Amino acid sequence: GMKPMDVLKAATTINAKAFHLDQQVGAIKEGLKADLMIVSGDPSNVISDLRRVKWVMKDGVVYRNEK
Image 1 (cartoon, rainbow, N blue to C red):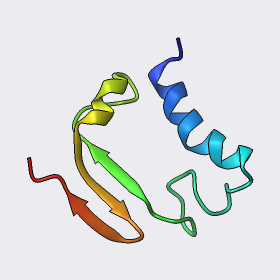
Image 2: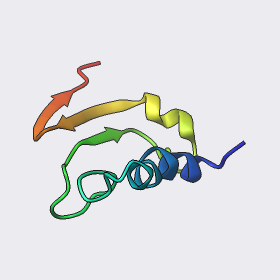
Image 3: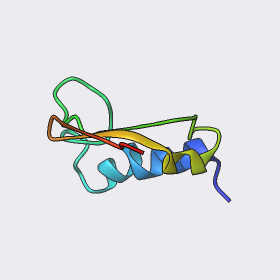
Image 4: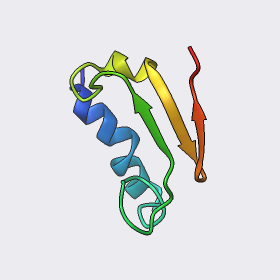
């Protein structure tokens, strides 16, 4: 299988480039849309940590997981 960091890259920067959207999304960079997901843990090492969502920012609005 893929390493966790490779999965994250495939779902973000690589996918954005493949669909010619890398000037809009796919990285945390000035000028790009700021849609973010903050999790507990380190999904770059343990991919299942992506399930531990603390909050999401979509179009500048923060949505918190109140669990």
